[in-house]
Amino acid sequence: MTETELRNKVVNVMQGWLGWSEKNGKFKAIIDFYNTQRPLPRGYAVQYDDEWCATTVTAAGMAAGLHDIIFGECSCSKMIELYRAAGRWEENDAYRPEPGDIIMYYWKDGSNYATTDCTAAPNHVGIVEKVAGSTITVIEGNKGEAVARRTLAVNGRYIRGFCLPDYAGKAEEDNDMDQTKFNEMFKTAMTGYRKELQDNDSGEWSKAAREWAVENGLFVGNGTTDNGDPNMMWEDGVTREQYAVVSKRLYDIIMEAVKNLIDKA
Image (tube, one colour):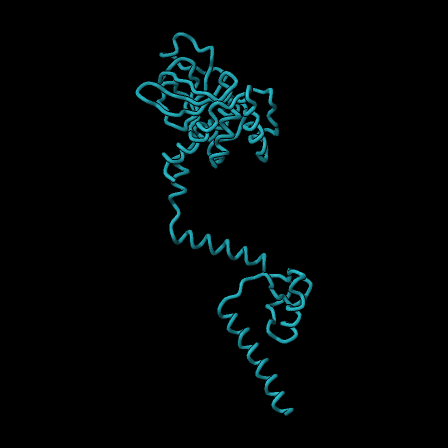
């Protein structure tokens, strides 16, 4: 996916949650989803009576499949720490964000906000939906106890700073896939999958047929299992080459039986 598509993916999740609130009870689904993370950030399960703005941002990243770049936290301050450690924190309040960026707020920002940089502990957080001209539209969890929109000016009052998920890096990883790498990954995956099947696990329904096939030499297995038994690999796939060998063995069995009948006649 492109960087733009990845950004829109998390925005689309937030748009789908608009109107979910404490009043209608739907906010609980966001908190429940957040709490499915393993491990939970700092080992803490969010409660229904907790503030849930940062929880919503994290849950949106999870729902979009971007939890590796939208770092999990239920605390605004702790979320900033994670992005700062990753080099993805933008301190400049005048930064012009893009959709999918995460905006932090501080509600006691001074009247000189346009010429100073707010560095206090954040109170609230949301995800930028769009920027048109000098207006930022944000979707936030727990805005008036609901998922709702807010508009504010670029470099506006109350902006604490921005967490910047690495959408470009994620897109580059996705775009780095070519046919050769896909083939290698597929081969590795299939080898691992077949290895799980290459043992003597089998269903009771096929027992009589399996025993007959072994007794009559149609199947001879390949190597041995850990306990020394012939490894028949009953659940593994059959290639055309293997099918040809089995067919020839069956033909030989039939012809030997026919020959014995003729000899007895």
